[in-house]
Length: 396
Image (cartoon, rainbow, N blue to C red; front, top):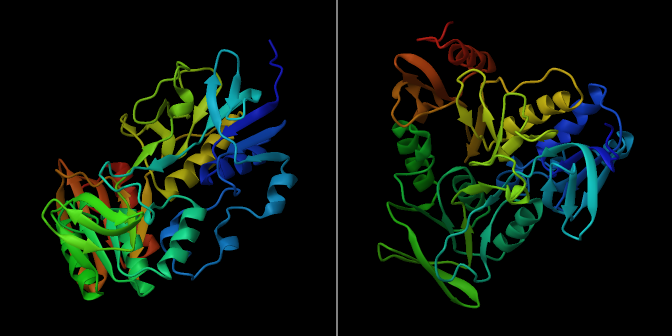
């Protein structure tokens, strides 16, 4: 039976995944009205520059948008900015927006991404205690940094490490508080972390390692961060980079399977008819490993958006890929391939201090992931091939 729809395709969420999905959907022959609903006040944009080039003032706002403004009209896409899908009713093929509007869809793509976590400590509500997720967050942080000194950054994963480096390059004195052993220790490569500890200290970042923030203090505006280890770190600006959580609240009570993201198969389909998910919010069944994974990086959003767009148009598309992502701090760029399990055997070829290194991660002798610095794209592809084939070494 035909469905009376307000949109043949309705997309909840306005990030890179959504933009790539629209592009691929139209290129694969997808027809009908497309509605993109996003809580953001901007059309889809790239997030990596927000903690790096855009934050440092090396790129302007126009350069971060995924598509020019004309793209949306040219592809018959209606953008509903500053609107949020509050509820999904798969049985009625409908969604309810935050203003009470009811919209019916032919197919629904959930691409709502994730949101930054905040420390549940006293003083977290003080002015000047920030997170970084949106373009507006980055703009406000850049403006605050111009008048802020010193600053405290909490967490040394991607956002925390990148923001610490960028603020330092802007001339802000930064203290980086991290419960672990150093920047990017979650990648499970002690040699990389040890090199980054030296690099950050050399560039003037005060590293407070093996410690956590117990509270923020100040009279209306943050003035200091106090740690469980007894340190008091002066701060007129704080940035929290302590992880994210997938935005799945719109599916509460819908019956759609959710567990650390929206549960979808290798073609991004949920267990509800015509409901799909991709990007940060999707917990995808990997057709290669037959395990579920939820990846929070640019390359994953880019790839899955393009693939789910094909699927939504009735063409072939699949989650079958070898994830690759990157980071850049103080001019050092490193690329991560696939998985870097904490219990894997790590073989280091080269030296990070020479900015020419490959760390191969093996499980049962087979390569399952890698970290590369100063290596060519060809070498990257050889490593990806080795992971895909379950090889014991990299050819070439």
